[in-house]
Image 1 (spheres, rainbow, N blue to C red):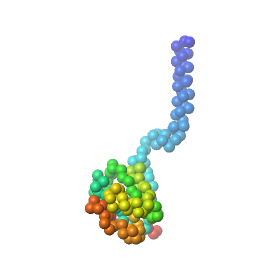
Image 2: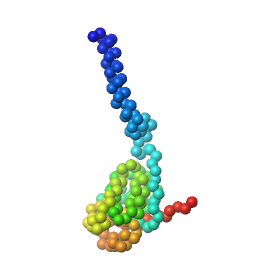
Image 3: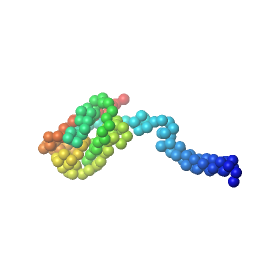
Image 4: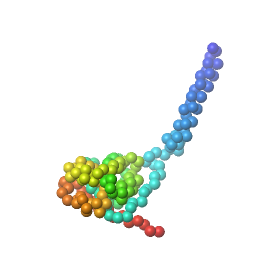
Length: 167
């Protein structure tokens, strides 16, 4: 085969393969984000409104590197960016706390806060032994289960009061 014809044949093969692989990738969400130049940190995200009511956030300060950041964040203060990823636990029987946790997570970078749902008794047992990072409870369940009594020294409770805005 002549060198010109071989180069033409190889060029055409590369073009067909690049089109077969490249077009689906560019049409995917990943491809669109690469072409537009946005990423998880700079892309616009929707902040979920916090539910109304009173909540208690238990922070295990022994397991958090950026204690001051998380205290301020959960207290509702303006905070800068933090690179620490955290795990948040809510009770399966506490839908308001789940919505509050999702609201907090929506204010952070994508996947910075993972939310897990557990049985209330198991969750409070983990808090008693310091085997958690963050727990969010509605005030009603915190009072019902006496969640704030007998906590270890490294656990800090942050009270959060949220009200729906009426427009």
